[in-house]
Length: 393
Ligand code: SAH
Ligand code: SF4
Image (cartoon, rainbow, N blue to C red; front, side):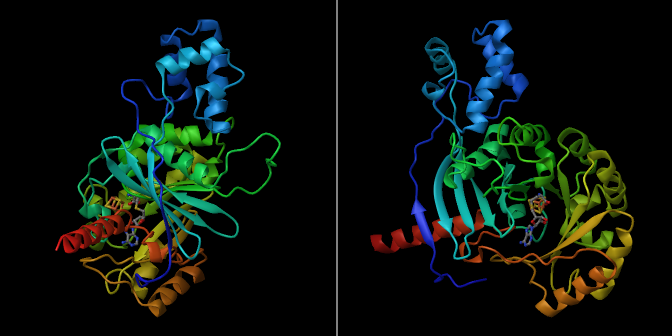
């Protein structure tokens, strides 16, 4: 972990984006829900389809948030929309930019809860890591989110809203005539690897990702969206058929005994059951390969024998193994494996013919790494509170 003195930029943004009460929010509605809502607000049946298409473009292609700017709709229709609906995103509270370009956003959702969203720029892509729940019902023993209470599922609007807020910040909504559609995108990939277990909030995650993938809007390819699950076996096939995005699985151990301790959902669906579901995934979703995430914990799951077992277990599954050096958090009961150990582990996997990238720690100066989301903010808040207490004397 880098020292807290590393220079970072921190802006405090105070854009008021509070949800006005009462009116339904258009953001997060599927096309079908949007049609239903427009119908209920008095849109003539014959026009519903066309109106859905027009609104969809304004909201998700142009990123417009103001009915008055929807110039291909009549004044009267714009007034009807404004009377009945709102266009609201979660509230962006703070943004931190790391030395390496990583951006971390603190986002406030209805009820005053907060989630963190991280943007990681790389030479060939820009990845946004988003959350699906506030907290998590699962209690993986190496994960800081697992120590936090599960507060609630995010709505579809709050999930796709994270993508929209990041596009706002990156100034990536197209402007007529200014953007070449082939231009590389700043935000090109989305990973559901923030807080929460996405497959325990299936419907909202699906609806949000469908909006993000819709070709007439944000238009992210389904191959640029990766859903990470701890292994909710009964929902894995549904993720293939109903979302069709790429899948990552938090594997982390090669025996049930160790995985039961690290990823307790393993007691419900063990390694063998999980692998069964994973074997079918690429066929059903038509995706190339599954990412096996493997957090490197010193003397727990990082031996050569583990690496060899891992290779054997996944044989026959088109796979890539993503080795994640453990991100330590205060009070964590584990340590990060040594660099040399991680390399030796990677070598065995590589020699067996699998890609085995070691995840580069990014944004460590702003605590933007996996398993740390929110914890840093909680800590920062604590220290602010401590400072206030001191100044009060
Ligand atoms: N709940 C989902 C997605 C969120 S976690 C899941 O478990 O897959 C995203 C990834 O970060 C998972 O692979 C998770 O195991 C990993 N992770 C959590 N805490 C971590 C930590 N402290 N260090 C490294 N990786 C961690
Ligand atoms: Fe939840 Fe994933 Fe953390 Fe496990 S690793 S506690 S499933 S967020």
